[in-house]
Image 1 (spheres, one colour):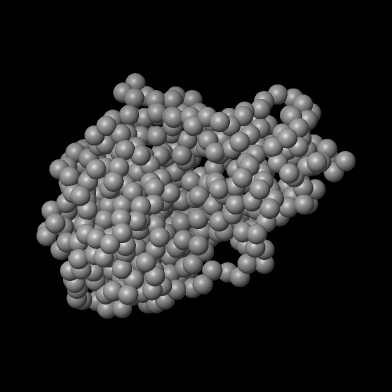
Image 2: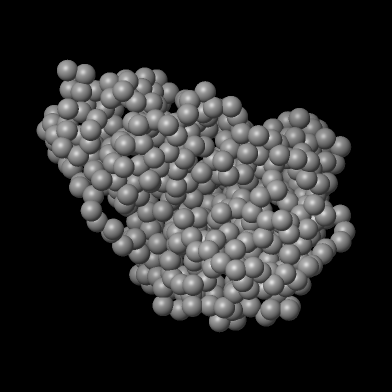
Length: 303
Length: 258
């Protein structure tokens, strides 16, 4: 079994998530080769074959060129699986490669099962087992699902290059918004999710945060709806936090949220849905209506 | 200019899911269906562009599935799409993303769409493959996970959402396809007059058998709940008692309350 692992590089840096690909390959018991559109000053700690293209020439986000490069490496390596991280880079590029090769793609793999892959579905409440029906496959792995593994060593670099303009032009990066709250330093965070029902209920969650001496956090839907500022967002596209106490109010527990708070020391979740995925990582799941339970808890804490 | 937006109907994600008879997807009994949330943003963006461009622009909404998907199609029409295509397929849930994309591509291939909008993924299957695969099959420029959109003179300027709150700005020339992320805009609620107006809009029915079929590339062998990791305590019952229990746990397990 052989895997071609596609590393990630952004704003001049090799991304740490690249090492999760080695964790996946190790669980597969597979041989590896890696492809990276990056720089020879940022080589992964890996002793195998590395197909390296120069990001300053090919672009960090130039899917047409990156696809060409991957197809070239596939021809040389003849891998059974081409593996990406399920990230804004991986989920964008993987289907292009799979379509060009006309092979199965299995998205956001969380575990290996007999002869196939386990993936989440229905907002992470359920799982599917999926098997490629093609001899080769493209896989994206869920960030954080497989262990970080640094094989060590210095790669045997094979330089590759792609030419042409591609069908889109990358203009540049836009920095994250300034944070008026640094949730990363907070010891206690009380977060509001969609389950609070409406914007008018945000003060109820804020009151509990104040009573506990903590900060207000929020899940993505609450921020998208404009109920809470983006600077309070916890998760993959917001802040990653690890407070002593995290209270999740009406948050179902989408993977993007869990990735941002699962390292909290102690997690209390309040949700009316007993099967909500937040229950998988919570130390305590309180099955209740958030808007009944939270004010009652605040009143008792304030005493 | 011709615009297409592709939508899926999905169950309310707060439902309890049970496997179907074959054990490979959910049993639809007792589930309430609605438009996939990501697709609402796609429809809204397409409608905003339709409104901006005005006369001479036509916006079509497409959905694949059994008769129930007409509800989602009607919502998209009430939001402002001009007309609709319902690809009738009672076996849609057995198809993999490659097959779904092939159906959309087969329909769209000779229609000359300048711009296609899709959600970045569905809430139930969540593969994030269909939009990009349609673009690949049709040879369109494509970008994904957009949280910002602008169009002028044949060029789309889109902001992609990257990890950590960073965004990537890209420009692509039409014909193109974009997949829409949550938060791209604020999807409108259809008004009553627009719901009434939508009833007169045309829905073209296409039995899926009339479109070429692609072979299945990935097989689902099981649909099941995740293995319980255990460890956590589940508390249920009277709110007053729950509060007392949580206070006791906070005192016992954390240094937060003394």
